[in-house]
Image (tube, rainbow, N blue to C red; front, top):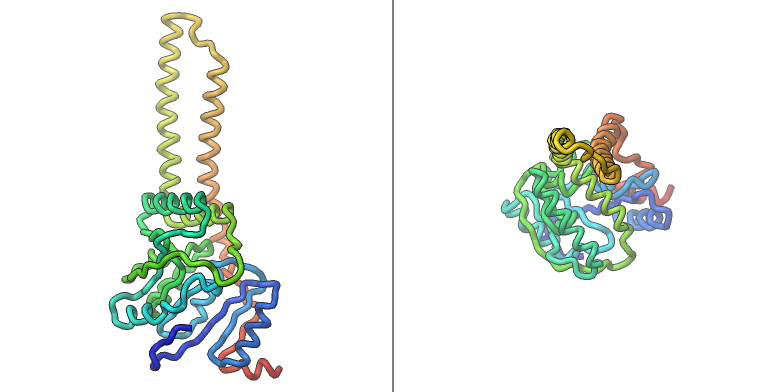
Length: 293
């Protein structure tokens, strides 16, 4: 652990996202030995975004930092992050990686294209290579918590709430243990969630595409009618007609898929289900009592 200033007291809050191994037992043992350790345990796996929200919601400090337990985000940066925020230079000191060394090239290529695409479509800037590892002031955390949407994309929410952010650039580091549970398909779905959450541009694209196709079809019909009146028998060609029908049908299904994504997100929001369900929690001042119970 990096050495922090002596006037800083630290609280560690761990979120157990419905693990099935010995994680919760280890957290309870840690909390029994160290009163500054607290833990939350979900009733099942609710995902990264829910765990992040729960951690922010239960954190008590004036300055809150978020980081993964695989230590891919170096804790040695914490003193520098804290110094930036305490000096008043920024409300948030965040970390971004300047390369993706160690990742599959195809995955890195798609990640860069995603950031380019979403920053073109959305008014909310999402920094390429931004990590969740950041240190924030209490007002910024409260602003993030005020965004209570069920479909969460934290990188976008951190940017959307505003506040002044100062970035620290680092090289991509390997995990200290374990492997990423994010497959290419799950990352693709997460990217789609981010696009749907922070821009309605796909809906506008679908509308413009539909309008353009209607215009092309109208002029094509006029052209075919005039050609038939002049040359007679020139309107044959079922093969080309089938190809055109398949093209139009594909575009229609694509646009319906875009509408379906927004409708599905709206459906989940109006249910007003909780972002997570807490099974149990502990640690802090009551850690000793809990260990004896």
